[in-house]
Amino acid sequence: MTEASVAIIGGSGLYSLFDPASSEKRRISTPYGAAEVTLGELGGRRAAFLTRHGVDHSVPPHLINYRANIWALASLGVKVILSSSAVGGVSADYPPGTLVLTDQFIDRTSGRADTFFDQGSVQHLAAADPFAPAMHEIATKALTDAGENFASSGTVVVIQGPRFSTRAESLWFGAAGAHTVNMTMYPEVPLASELNIDTVNLSFVTDSDAGLTPASGTVDPDAVSHELVLKRLAEAQPRIVAAIEAIVRAMPDDYAPQELIPADAVADVLARPTI
Image (cartoon, rainbow, N blue to C red; front, side, top):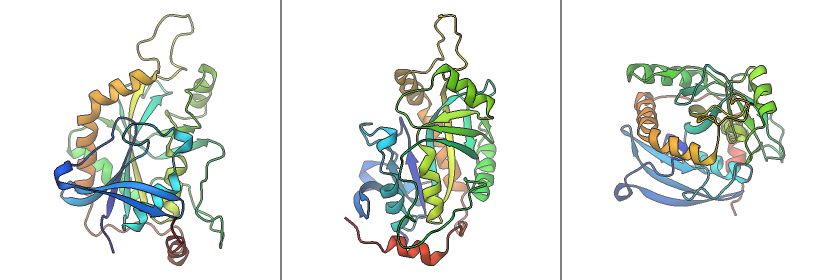
């Protein structure tokens, strides 16, 4: 049974989305632990909302229970996940204030549980285009029609966190072809793909990361800090929520996600006993 066809995963700064008076909070048991999900209305459709770091931002990036979150959303019948992310810019072409529709990632994390297929069967996920191209096209048109100024593509480096990059690392990421840096898109995106859920990511560049700051010791107002990230996200929240709603509203009712993993293998994962 489909309770919500689309889900929004909120990153730093986005801890609620629906009117409390007309939404339902639910604690969903999964084989990996419980996940907290809120069901409500957005963009004219039933939607699920989940905040990565918890409502009090108490869960660091490397300790997020990604498998529980994605399994819980799949159990609700979600076909598409629209995620919001705070990112740093490692390219001068992606300055603070830029909205980005991310379409590629480079994984630099370690030790995270990043597959559902670690028992019973082996499945090799095709990941050349990790964010669903069809949803990316829908999102691009939706933001264009809404008059939003945004970057229609971008490569993100996903680092382990919770520390920020050194200047050498930041310069290295940019030299490798990355545009932004983040701590949470991996393994969230491939885990969703393993359960045949399409993803589209809307990132907001909050800072210029370490590599674009001067090495002379002068203070750069765009240099990354946790306080700066939260301040700029708070200021940009109405813009981010409006962009999310525009994308959700543009989704066709009969949208069919990619089947990257055999349906019976996905069904086996969803049939695992919960704890």
